[in-house]
Amino acid sequence: MKLTDEEKAMRDGRDGAAVARAMDLLIRYGEALGADDFVETRNVCGTVTATTPFMRDFALAKGGDAGGLDAVFSEFNLDSAEVVNVPKVRAFSSHLQLGFDPHHPQEMGVNEQMVQFYRKSEAMAARMGVQMMNTCTPYQVGNVPLRGEHCAWMESSAVIYINSVLGARTNAEGRESTSAAMLTCRIPNWGYHLDAPRRATLGVALDVAVDSVEDWGLLGYWMGDWVQDRVPVVTGLAVVPNLPKLKHFGAAASSSGGVEMYHLVGVTPEANTLEQATGGQALKEVRRYGARERAETFEKINANGSDRQVDYVMLGCPHYTIEQIWEAAQLIEGRKVHTNCALWIWTPSAIKSLADRNGYTQIIEAAGGKILTDSCSAMSRAVPPGTKVVALDSAKQAHYLPAILGVQAWFGTTSQCIDAACTGRWA
Ligand code: F3S
Image (cartoon, rainbow, N blue to C red; front, side):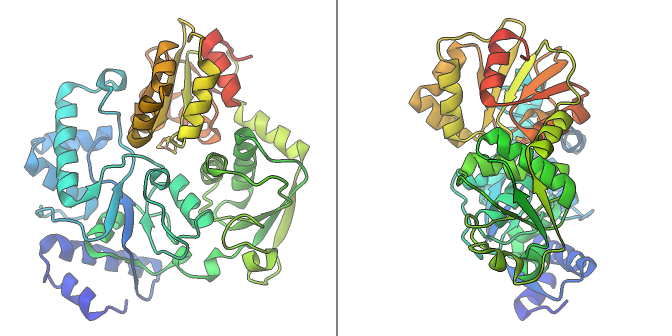
């Protein structure tokens, strides 16, 4: 790779061992990708704490103290067997979701020792200068990159959102590359940082109205399954969507496929026209999405459900917006969660503060539900005890949870999910 003098100096140790390791990692990564050079980034989203079961065990085996944290960071964030001291970040860096909600250890099945260890790693991350947003949706709690801004983000649902809806530029990075980018402000200039890979090569023509969150989840799931990691452009939209809908749409598309970028003609910033979205090139294939495709997708997502007695209703994948919590509060106000069922709603802690202040938390808790933060059931592997059947309003979570935990899953609207929580049955 072509390196600038600044990059060579970082590689050669001018700024200490951790930065040198980070540059070495990025150079190896860039060469593997076939990148010619680096792009400068000032906006990184990644993870530096140790909260997944595997990381927890590793950290505890290393002592679970400050030395344990340095060992985790060296090994898993910088690919360095040699333990280095962790420096402050240079790029504006946000922390993604965790492996559990530290405010609800009992529900998460983690012990006090683990929570204490997490607190130490959170303090370390804060000392590094990482913003502890602890969410898969940093774009709804203050990290909203601009069009054309080069970023280094992990988390597939966030990557597809900022590429497509905001016009920012990132590839789906990993724990190691984002950590190295935090220390160096560099990431390989490859993939979605370039113009050509962002252009659509496949078309989706809508024959049905796509309006509700459920509609968008279904369309995303169908589209991702077809296009996999290519870039589609959608035409024929009748109603302009909003943040929650595109949050669900992208999350579904990046679950059934590996979609990291899409265009909606007339809506997303690089698709004022079809010609702009394609760069003037002919689409390789166009498929129509109509009532039959919608129905088949609905059946496919629900294929795993058979038992209608629901033990757990999970909302908030990707993490709920304040608008969605407001909706859930209105749907459940004055009702009670069934004694055989649990309702957990996942959101960023910053949004939970707003929900507390607006009285939504009180309404949901009075009904017997809970608002949790920082994680989700797929990440934490935590569900209420004895859960066999789950109801969800997220195609992404319906895709993952049965595979991760062996539960049955029903997918439907938020209203259907709240009804299931209050009756204990999927209607
Ligand atoms: Fe977020 Fe968990 Fe879904 S981290 S996107 S809520 S799988």
